[in-house]
Amino acid sequence: MATRIYLMPMLEVGNGRAPKYMASPINQTGLAVRWSGMDFGYEPLALVAADVTPAQHTALAANADVLAVPVDLQSSPGVGAVTTIQTYLESYNVPADWVNTTLTYAQILKRASVMFQLAQRLHGILGNVRLFGGAVTLSSTLASLPASARQSLLDAAASFGWDTSSLAGASTVREALKFAIGAWGIKPVQLMDVVL
Image (cartoon, rainbow, N blue to C red):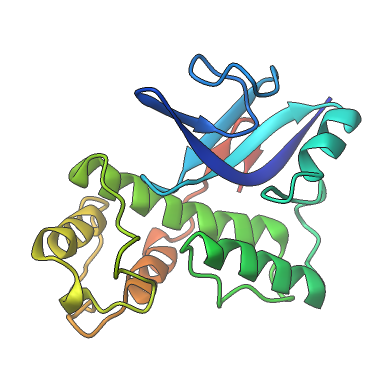
């Protein structure tokens, strides 16, 4: 077994949420393997580390809604992989215009996970309410958000101790989420035994 990293949808099951392909108390149909996940706030996406066999990895990676990360996290994606990563993340409202061939997979995962951390704090403040949907997109300005969502996003960033004074009404949601990458600094992010 090896620890592999995946991006996959989150399921709403009863009163809970779980990664689509991972078994849990609320998702009995997923793989019964050791896993750790980080959701993108209340959005339907999770970053998951799982101990899987080669056959289990092949089965997971075969799902069209799963993005499997290479086992060598210190390698860099080629041009085609960059496009795939950007398309996948953007389809779930995770800014990905910064993904390029000069970054390693570990660096890409860390940056994405930092935005996930901010989204989790936002979920903690807003409750079970999605930021995206309806008229809100990555291109929406902070000024165009409902006042409670705008303030909650700024409060979520401030809860990390970050100076949010550079985020103004004309800033986009994309810019606000990407702001987290620089604000996070060098602190590691860990999923199971994988340190990013």
